[in-house]
Length: 140
Image (cartoon, rainbow, N blue to C red):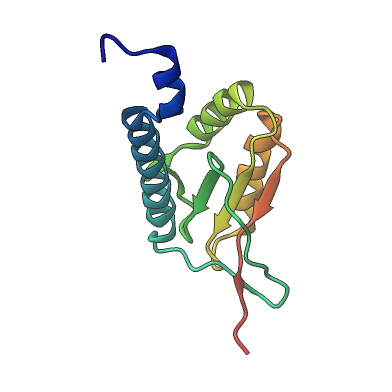
């Protein structure tokens, strides 16, 4: 290809480089696999969320914080049990890095209300207002 004429080059047309394309596809695949693993870990906790007639299936957004509250009142985020101070510190970091970060609270249906209020207070201290609660659809 050393003595390639301009007219011969124009006849070949554009060339698509496959190596960068494969890299991008591989990174996208790894991203979604990692995202689904974290989602599955949060769902596997032994938490029985309340049932609701009006519960809707929602689309999870990447990076949302899921706060789990067990019936004993333990607060678990990303498989780590946090104290109230630790939760507030973590939420402060999240809110400074990502303003308007969505937070989902998954409280066990038998947990005391005071534990949920404690998590809401930590969210308020961190100035996180995009909060939703998790519930499962009531079966008919």
